[in-house]
Length: 436
Image 1: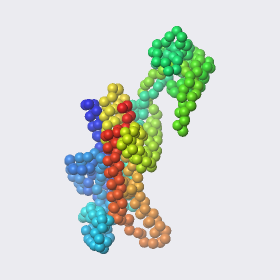
Image 2: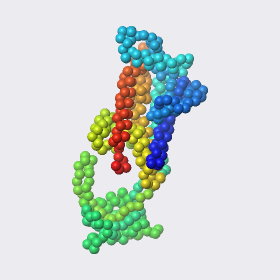
Image 3: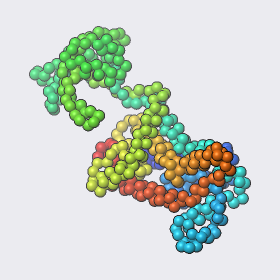
Image 4: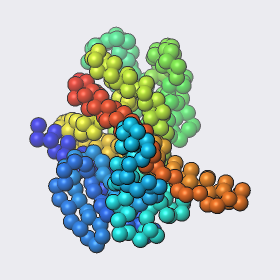
């Protein structure tokens, strides 16, 4: 139980660090471009601790589920003074007008006593885009670093070309026997003279660098005698191996299955951690980006499946969406498993890296209040300015995004609903990665 708690705490700290770096990605370019930043906060809810340095208040809040920086003039000043009664509000006090007024009032507070040149909305489009991209990019960079350390530093468990065990006989298909009988045929590797500790150098004249390559050659030669070179006690030894025929079930990409005849030798490889080239980590990170983009693109269908599995008790898709509760629970289970410490660290690093990929992709969705929504507005302003310049018209005023607050509220409600669904699913019908 203690190890489970340690795993959860480690993941919470990792999530907090990821959020902190995300907000630093916004904070640093904002300050470099001269924007006044009033607050830098990690978390949501009540403030646990804060301290003011210069013009910025830095703090930590109770819930590690987000963060924000407060920049002066995220939106241009409203044409109607904040708090004034608009004709629409006067006629019916409609919710739309009230929400817009509240947003304009909050925006006006950030403009109080601030030089207009230090407001976000007055920046050139490219600077606004850089500031808003800074957060998601920090998550991507962190994921790349974590995957690089995982693959090139710690290394990944792989079957090597060193032989661990050699079967003495070929047991019949479906047999539960643990020992050979006189009726069982001798295993090809044993008959060829391959010994535990031998290192496979080449098979059928082809040098091999991994057990997967050696296995592929063996499977491709059922019933054929092939030359094998092994390294034993520092010198190379030439042997002859004749794999026997073995029936295996193969699943195609379309889900259909078929039975194929492949070669079988009866050797088991030694598993060890292998450090991969430095580019494997970044490559894995970008492959994960593509996978998460597909998840986000199909999010409504995946959320429906999650809800269906929650209420029916069905097994959830391990590649489906998950809340921080689910990630924390998996981290706790990993920490509590009976496995080498390095293996547990590797899995938790992989979880944290994948979480940062999810933060990178999700924050770029072009909807307010996400970073992607602010980027879209900045690009829209840039397009309007370019068209005006092309047509010889005066430069248009920046887009007043406070008028989109009602739409933003709908997005927030949907995000809260999605979070509630995933929280419930992760508590009552969690993803099973390590067995039920």
